[in-house]
Length: 146
Image 1 (spheres, rainbow, N blue to C red):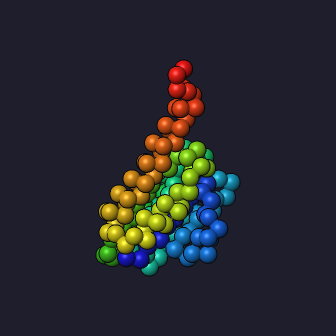
Image 2: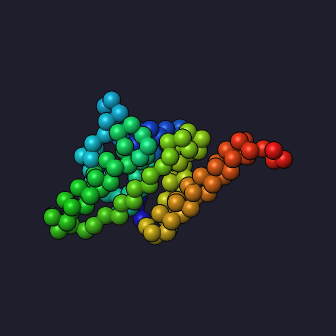
Image 3: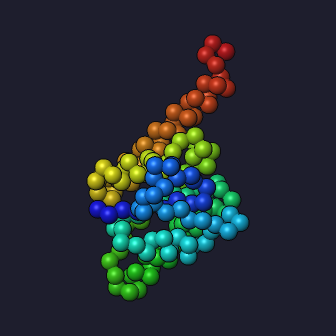
């Protein structure tokens, strides 16, 4: 299944993936992204699109990406075209600075799973990192024996 990964302006794409045409970063003017920015990114040959966007960022890119998804899918429906599979993952900005979410998405897409299984795999990998990160924070705040 052909896929594409779309990220908001807050994520850094790893050096080894920057030349991969299946990954697109929505660039924002003054941290302001518009649903139409995402809508344009969705217009591709990809059958499956994974969007990485944060609700805790300036401009709430998650809500913008969801609105862009809705606009794009509504447009396809009006034209009588096949519906695309688009998943929007809401990531935590603080966690994005410690873990490479783009690589997690890339690895999930590369497994050749169905759309639903790819989304579940990505959510599982992301949530596993969140739990480990939260446990490390808790351990730092409340050392053993305290």
